[in-house]
Image (tube, rainbow, N blue to C red; front, top):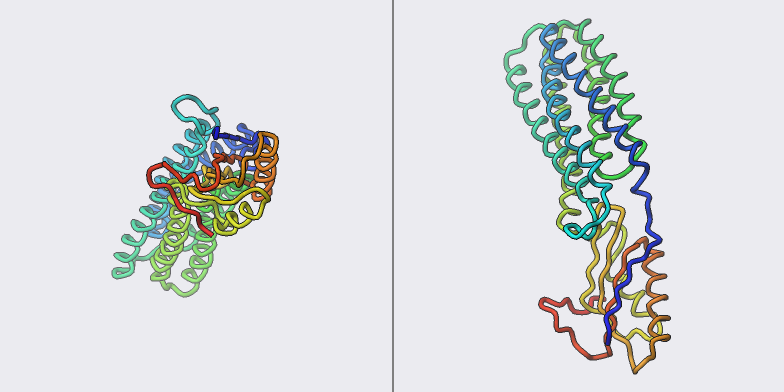
Length: 310
């Protein structure tokens, strides 16, 4: 029986807000992050604060990653072509993975420097730390607000960076006040270690999600067994096999499946079956579903064909 390839054109474009808005958000984030990394470097040297110096290193690396994210974000909006028939959406996921890796590397560097300072504490300029903390909270709050207007994985990774920095600067602010009144200089490297641990945990989680998507993992919230049961429940469908479900970028989901039909239905009956199946996938937010219609018991001739899963 003839193959039937269907690509629904009522795509969910929740992931595709205006190109200009996303590019502008990452552009502002890059500019603010880069300028403030320089401010942190100078301020960290003047105050002798390892927590501020380590965050300057962290921000410098992130600036490069955000620049890459910005470039890949712009390219991810390109339409599908002969080389990339699904388009370039996954470029944004690639940048999210890279950014998560840089966050993790920066956190390790922060922890390394902080442990050395914790073993050999040095005096710091508490008032200078306090001033930089206030400035850091303001700058990162503006950047986080600009980036948070989109919810895709790439922007979440960038937004996570700024949220981490805001919390880190709040900790530095409190630490500077404590150091000013108690002279407990060990608080400075202790803060740096705590920030590094928090950054590491969140960067790992975000990177793991990006890797899951790049390896064509199934979309969250959609259980394959439940989807199969829904498809099999439709009249005329006697079997489902070789079902594959994945997500391109965390928002745009793709499904392919072989559908067995009983008897010898005519084309109009087959079209009705496909319409009902498409309605199911649409309700599950799967905009691109491809069904190959086969007679019952025909068997799958594809290599590594997946059996029916219920």
